[in-house]
Image (cartoon, rainbow, N blue to C red; front, side):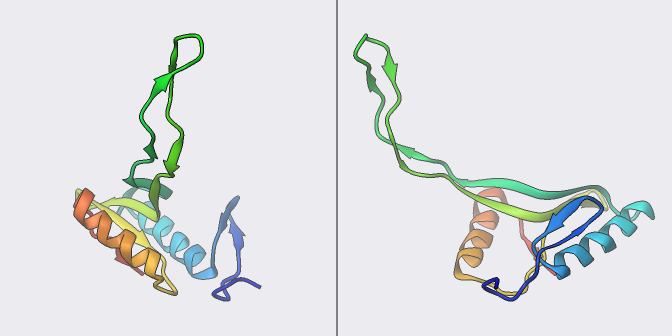
Length: 119
């Protein structure tokens, strides 16, 4: 059983995390066919925090050795990105607003100037 009772489902050869997300994709596809929106993309990744590494060092044969990763990068993956009226729109099909999501949404606005629309 999934944590938030959502069920993965497929449509048009794509897998979605929930029925709500799948239904929104179908709506956006219709809007794109009607010419209301364009450039519809799914699962678009935005980098919020780069990975953190130890300083580079010198390898045993004198070459450069990259420092080990201390902290992995943090990315926000938007459910949908499209263009409407010349503006890029980032959407997230939300059922539950987790603490992680809220922090990432705020970082998207602060770092990228993008306000995530919740549907």
